[in-house]
Image 1 (cartoon, one colour):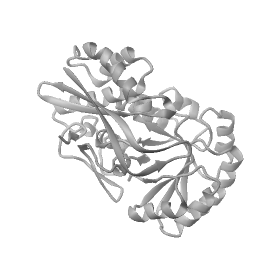
Image 2 (image 1 turned 90 degrees about the horizontal axis):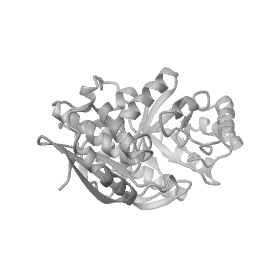
Image 3 (image 1 turned 180 degrees about the horizontal axis):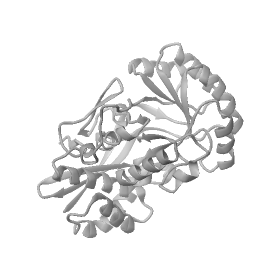
Image 4 (image 1 turned 45 degrees about the vertical axis):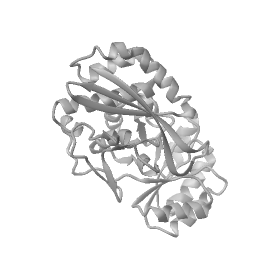
Length: 337
């Protein structure tokens, strides 16, 4: 097996702002695994919140290429265990490798990944479309530019309720709110009352990630369901989130890819929690991988590639929130040359 690493700077259509940062370009790393005439593709983006850079991922992966290239016919689960031992806590690099290997493995089996897993796709959830923090009139403009059945609205300002109130006058779409750790317990509980009146479906990660006492209070008193994101990074975090959140948002880059994400989703479902997978601002390489988990999810946020000025790959397509799979096997990805 041969490993090929590529780096790209993904330019966004609009400046993207959340409570803690703004950016116009998203650096990303693409891993290609080549074997027996097939190629599998994986992706992981840089992330300042988790102190991950493309250079650090590339450095870590280059060190283990000789070991990875000796792997032949291991299952994705066996591959994940090997790669995890080699990479340690670098889950972002592990994610890129794991997605690429799952893609390659399914292509060799002449199947789409969801077919290999035995999933039925007839009841897949729709994806939301994200509206980043901006001036209210700009947020309205972005929403009108992309009519959509479900919006995820980023908040964390002094005008949060005013923002949602104004957006609601322009659409009947479902609203989901992501405060990215920016609210207090009292703000969350009080905001939930007003936001429920405005047609909000749930709140995502309103408090700081490690405020477990606060999460418990919000879980008990919020009139809206609360979904964990920054508080749910790796597999062990699912159990921690039980009785603190109503559901978990699993991010492939944070947990180490599709293999570990499937285990996290299964664990959450056993605990009676809602399941969601979210994305970063990724190309169609990472986004297409998420699509194969849809049959196991209650909610999904996989609009990352829609936010780009120009994609670097083809794969799944999205129309009015509905995800359509590629005709290709594996994750269905092909890099644009």
